Length: 133
Image (cartoon, rainbow, N blue to C red; front, side, top):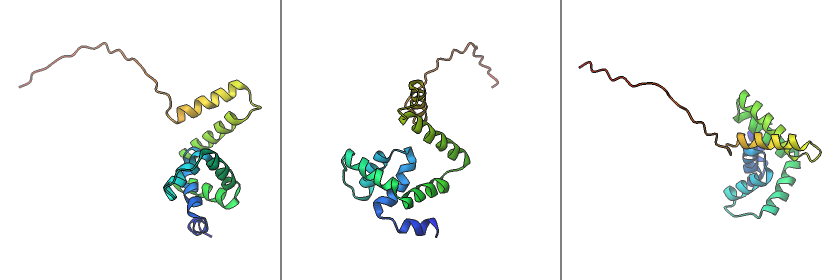
């Protein structure tokens, strides 16, 4: 069965969820975006969290998310997404050391461009104008 055939067996919200989830691997946010795009309606955050959890337990949804990632991303991006998944696992692991959880949160924030690094550069050069007319 091809990816397209598998996708046809999913409901519209499930199909959209499989496209939204790989963007940030946040089930609640993915479900909120998917429900807005498919139904055009606003879903409560708690409802979205519950529904996303249910969808992520379905083997066909897991399979389609992985297939979508494989189709859409190149090898370097797949490595990056592997890192993102790892950082999310560490950040959410209540047994992990606080320093590790903080570093994982920092790496995720940098990945999502939440920090802007400001660098001051000083140039010590002179300008020479040459008139060759």
